[in-house]
Structures are given as structure tokens and as C-alpha cells.
Length: 237
Image (cartoon, rainbow, N blue to C red):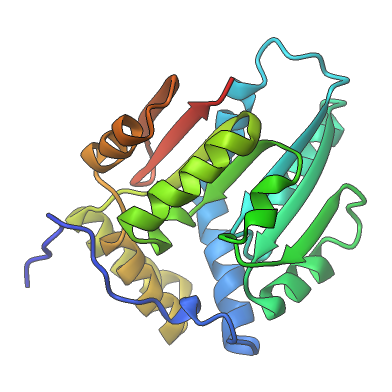
């Protein structure tokens, strides 16, 4: 059966139910984080932040907000990087599912510079608060095109330094390889189904270029990265 990746899928993901809770969701969150880390996904986001921080003093307080933070793995990666390099990061994770936030908090008890909030990311208060960098790791594909434009417009007006997007390439090969990963990692039903839908809701380069043109960013860098994802760095200053 051929996989049609010409257009972004509008199929829902099970994880989009913000009332979901329990062991199946916890397992899915942790497996997603583990696979993302194993395939170099955390490095894609971290490298994007490094690009935005070039020539900035190490002592400067940098407020980074992770939109759709999941189990908080990306924030803990950033906290460890900041600690190792004597950087001053204030890290906030936002997710619309309270169970997810509670799980992230339990995994981050030893990190004094990480806080979490259960909020709708389209709430005006999210972008009214002080923030230097917004990051979205495997989050943007959950939204329709018009929602992405709205969200990035909010980030553009609020972020003092920039935005880092790390998300999936819409690819038939990626789809087939993920099916193999499901077997290797023994992913549960929700992880399998949502993962495949996520790829079909992912992006082609021309999608990101279209958003860039519509949003009129002063600086935007789009790069393909392993494994089948795009690193999109946007400077807002």
C-alpha cells in the first residue's frame, strides 16, 4: 500500500485528548522521549538554541519556554547543558494535559530551574509573560496551518531572542521506518497509531517556507536533520 504524503493529514491523534491519563499515556510519553533522544532529536533543538545564543554573555538570564513539553525530557536536557556550561537558564514547560504536567514534574524534582504549567498554549497569557526563546519539539505538527500561523505570530511578538522548531518531515520512508521502530521498541497501540499519524501531519520544506513568507520573519533558517525532521530557527531581534 502506497503512502500519500502530498498534503498534511488532518487525522486526529489519541494524545490530543487533554483529559487522557494513566499508564498508557505515561508509557507513550516516556517512549516518545526515549526514541527522540536516541535518534538525536534533543540535539536538534539544543543546537538551535546554541545558534540563537551565539555572542550572548554567559551570565545573561535566558528564559526558555517549551511548548507541548511532554514528560519534560527536553527541558532536563537544557538544564543539564546549562549546568555543564555555567549558563543561567530559567526553564518553563507548558502542556494542556494535567496528567502529563504531573508526570513531568515528578521526573524533574531535582531541577530547581524548571517549572511546569498546565495551560492552553493559545491562551493569551502564555505569550504575555516574559520569554526569550520559545521551543517546540514535535509539537507544531499537532496543529492546522491556520493555528500554526496564529501561534507563531504570538511567539514572534513575544520572544525577545527567537524560536526553535524541531518537527517531523512528512515522508513515506519515515512512515515505513517508524513501523519497524514500533516492533523494535514494543510501542503500545497509542504510541504506534499516534506516531504514524504524526508523520503524516508533519511537514515538507515548502510548508515551512510558506509559513515563513506569510509571517514575514527577518531571519529564518530551515535545515533537514536526521532522523527525518526539520530544524527551523527563527530570530525575533
